[in-house]
Length: 425
Image 1 (cartoon, rainbow, N blue to C red):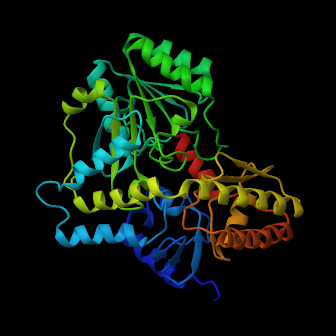
Image 2 (tube, rainbow, N blue to C red):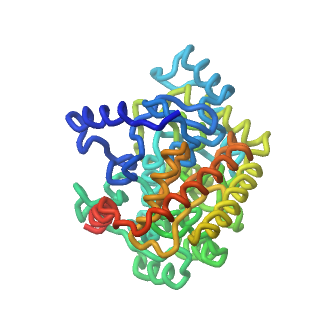
Image 3 (tube, helix red, strand yellow):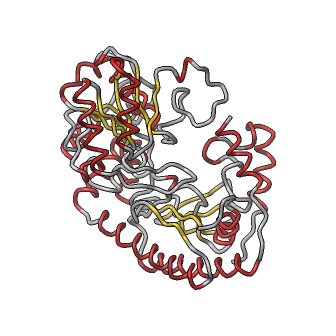
């Protein structure tokens, strides 16, 4: 089928009239290469279709929620069966207790669970609980880390006041000296250290946590009576069946979860240790849809697959197959790639590409051939992918490398300069 985007273009034009900028957030037109579709009609397994009928092998996985495949039969049946009985009622269903029991049973540091809708909800609750428990204000965060889109943490500064960002001190991820300096600056007012499970910032190479850094974060919190918070919204269940920092032998006090825990159905969670139960019980947080039963039923079905299948091992193997094949193909066409982070959460960028012109051109070529990747945001391997899917992606990637090579010199990406200016403002 010939790639076309006429329906998507028409929807974009209509959206401009009724939606600010035509789109916002992580799907903003500033964020994506020119040929990327904005509107989609359906998904199945590892694939999605845009409104024009173009099919894509989707390495964004909905920006993370798609763990076991779009329209997964067992998970979606659990959701639809509960919806038929009643979803958002005046109070929660029994699934709330069952899901809390399941998550506490899965995650070794957790003694209790609270549920909400978005990762931002969970990280904001974590901050509130830390401040409520310690009666202190200052939180220490890694520079460039993403913890949500509330005023205290959103990456763009529009509509944000100095008061929204008060009581924050920043450090360099994986840098023990920088972390210690930030804690010294916080002084006696330290409430919590926030940490991403890996460094998955945009525009830069990913980094696995240095065990010495992770251990020092734990020690500093213990020394100062502060809470260690691991924001596992993006990586949760993709690195381990436990908290991601279980891989480095460090237990957080609180961990935030979302995206993959119900395979795309809208729910997130905050898990915590016993010592912080009372602090969690004495903050006021809620939402009209936080107690909806159907997403909790979907989460229970998802966690059953987490416990009973080899999904994690398969996604790692598929990611390694993709990484090796891309390195070989890129080198054959004279390109160098920087592939960083865990293989199952790939970030793919080009060497010698300071303005991302190669990355944007390559991703535009991929999209027209049926592979959806991203030029500067980390991606995901889902358990619905197969070796044949990865080989399809590699064949497409090879052709896209050839297209970029033959195009010759490329113009800088104007929209990326605009985006950087917005972030730095």
